[in-house]
Amino acid sequence: MMCKPIPIPMKSSLPRIVAALAVTAFLLGHFSTEVSQSQEERKPRPEGQGGKGKPKGGGGGPNIAKPRIADTVKATIYADNWFKLYLNGNLVAVDSISFIPHNVVSVDILPDYPMTIAVMAKDNADPETGLEYDNTNLGDGGFILKFGDGTVTNASWKAKNFFHGPINGDLQNPKTRHEAIPANWFAVDFDDSAWENATEHSEEAVGPKEPFYENDFLGAKWIWTQDLGLDNTVIFRTTIPSPPNGSPLPPDWPRGEIDASNRESR
Ligand SMILES: [Ca+2]
Ligand SMILES: [Ca+2]
Image (cartoon, rainbow, N blue to C red):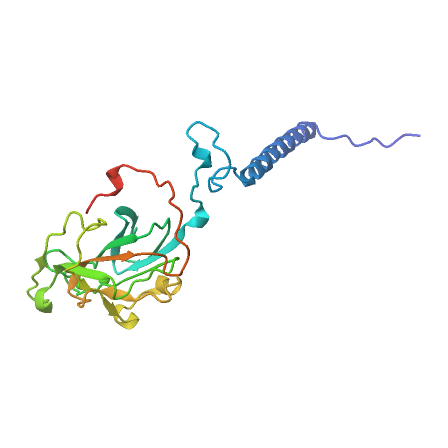
């Protein structure tokens, strides 16, 4: 009797199967490598253990206590409209959006006490008129900050205005007044003793936008000079002697010396 012919794979199927097997083998090998690297990254590093153990020579670097990310605190900052922040003379944060939308800037900082905080905050204002939106509107300012160590803005900070206008709020014939900003306004040893204290303003007066409410500013106050509308460039300064939340003072970490490129004044 005649046997029914057994179906055989189409000519093109065999190369496809071989190719699929090869791809599978490659992916398995790649995945294995990835897992291996990931496990390697998770291994605790022997360095940075607080200086324990005997020096191994070569400068003793691995045996020096080094800060870890857990030693940093979070800095959360909102400015209407823009700011730059110095800690102990070093530029550590610049608002990434100069005007609108209003944004919150959040960065990790490695605190060092006493900690001199210096902030330049700017309301959006035309240098010649003090107005915004093509000289059609009088804008207002506002600044608030909170660090993970309990540091917050309040009236204990010093504040000084360097750009006022439009003088008398005159929108029809707007004039402005500028004062030169000291070159070393952010330095630790800058003398701000003659400056007035910052003025705390209500949340209602500043009118923060949505990002403010999505971040933790509990305990922090909105600050500016007395004139939220006409003072447009304000510098704030304060010195925090120790962590306000009672955390112990950090060790004397090796902090290094980066060149002066992050210390420009304007
Ligand atoms: Ca203004
Ligand atoms: Ca504004």
